[in-house]
Every structure is written in structure tokens, then in C-alpha cells.
Length: 278
Image (cartoon, rainbow, N blue to C red):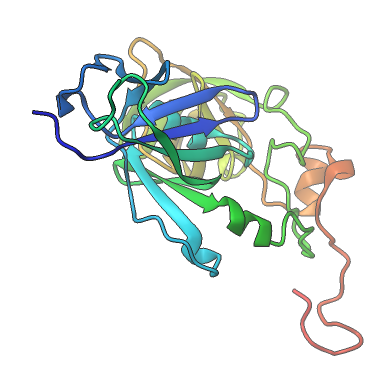
């Protein structure tokens, strides 16, 4: 028999207008609108994913208004949020549908249980953690202020940086992997130091390179920000150089000083209060 627990529906709306609809309920709930593709509610199909989330809180403390969702590492929506090269405004709405008590389970009463934006997504072992920020908490945040720092504030290859990976990336071949470690074969002219902080591009997925080791000329071992997932039959890949966010690297490696987002000539101490600036 179907239970009387409410069905929670998760709606992610991306800047390009695409919408991902998920539900944590599985097909064993026993309702007539559950199928192989997910649950159909109000004409929309919500894809089943083993998604979990904490209690929804309403408080005047911004940090406590955050909501954390957890999805498997392989979930397509989670990977889309993690792989985004630049933080994007992705709205998140959690709906509560009383499917069990509805006269017509295909058109149950739907209430908004939570609404806000995605504040970030990160990999934690075999799962992806998605942080949601309540819509009212978003109004209390300070917004995108310029950070007063000698180093560049822009994300490499992001909108503020203004660069694409195309002119800088070099093709290579997969030569084995274990967890977060990947061995690749690329041009022997590449300086191993330039790979740190860069990207490994494999199919449509981008991995952040935390460290790199030269094994032999043209052979490198990369440590990535998350476990490498192989695409069957695909060995081709590409690497794009990293950036230490200094003015010198921006100029010599990328010739991109016009978009440099740091303040390299600020003094170490405030001349009026004699306190440290950075």
C-alpha cells in the first residue's frame, strides 16, 4: 500500500533557461504516476535521484538559512553544477506534493516548501554536496564586491577573466588513472609547473588540477579535485594551463593584463591607520 508521506520535488533553473526536475522518491512508493522515468506531477516528469536534504529552517541568521542537498557523484544535475567554470545564478525551488492524499494523483496540491539559489556545489568522496541559500537570505548578502587584493580575483577562464581554453589547451592521451590520479601523454615541451591550477578537459567534463608531476618527457601524473570518471572508448583529452593569479603570470603566460582583477601596487599598510590592508 502507498504510504502517506509527502513527495518532495526539486526544480533547478539554469541561466540558459534549462530546467532539471528531480525527486528523491523512488518507484516503490506504489502510486500510479510513478514510472521508469520518474514521477509525473502536474504534467512534468521529475527524474528519480537518491537525493537527501536536511531540515528546512527559517531564521534571521544568514548561515543557518542554508540548505544542503546530497546527490550521488554520478548524478547529471550535480555534475553540471560542479563542472560550471564560473559561478552561475541557479535557482532552486523545493516543492511539496501530497500525492497520497490527492483525489487525482497526477494533479495533487503543490506547495512551495523552500525557494532560493544554489550557493555552491562540491565533491565529497562519492557524493556531491549542493548548498542552497534561502531567497530571503540572498537579499541580506553583501553581493559581488571587488576584493581589494594584490592577486587577481577572477576565476581562470571565467567571465571576468575573459579567456577561453581554446587558444591555450593542448591535446593529449589518457595513459591510466586511479581515483583522483590520472596519467597523461602530452607534448614534452609543456612545463609541469604550468599545469598546476589548470584544467583537464575530458569529453564535456572539466577537472581542476591540484598538482602535477613529471614522470618522463611528455608523461605527466595529475592529481585532480575529484575522482576521474572514464568514458568508454575515449582516450583523447586536453590540458589547459593554470594561473597563480599574479600580474606577472597574467602578462607572460596569457597576455591578458587588460582583464587582470588585482591591485598589485597597493601598500602593505594603510597610511592613515597603519593597520594591514591585506
